[in-house]
Image 1 (cartoon, rainbow, N blue to C red):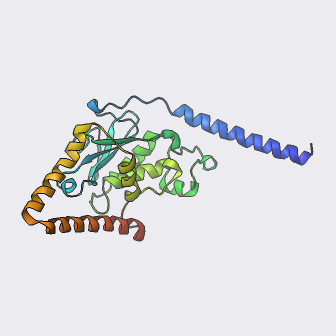
Image 2 (image 1 turned 45 degrees about the vertical axis):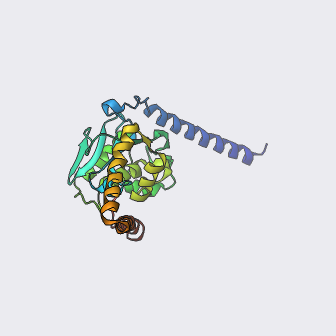
Image 3 (image 1 turned 90 degrees about the horizontal axis):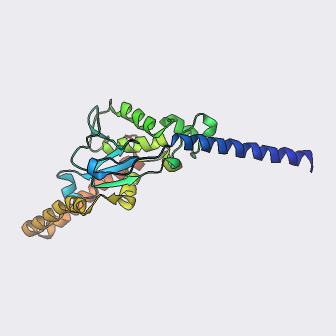
Length: 243
């Protein structure tokens, strides 16, 4: 075997060893989580959702979003300069999605990033653990003014996911976050489904009964404008919506 070939084999072996050591260090930091316990409002490492009064009655795909620490306590950006801890605003959790911590990037240094955009991740802010990322985002949003259209609870959760570089991405925003919850989120129970959609059904029934098809046209226009605003603010005016 030529010296050059031996050198290449040794180099690959050393890289594999470094990667294995890095994976072992990450795995060591990921202690087992407690079970999800809706009765006691504990959702370890989950994104959680609940309907909003009035807003969800008109647009049931919109709600209040939070993210949970490893001990299951909910954090949510509930108002200007305020991040709630273990007291989810607007009612009990209706829908949740548990995230895999092994899909996060916890780099001890720049060379050990597991995400695709290491420099962008550094700009967003890296962390050494799940709770560390959530604490950093909490400190950041404790100095933010709440605004439903530009800086809301979804912005806070997206900021957390960007600090975690969840799923090797630092491009989390309001749009793809809503899509993630809608497509993969699980309902806590049947009553949570009723609580989320029953007011909308009642509003639809009363609206059509009193105003006819013009009510449906107005409701569709409201949804179109609302979705259009967030799509425009997220992808066309990237500094307009905070994440």
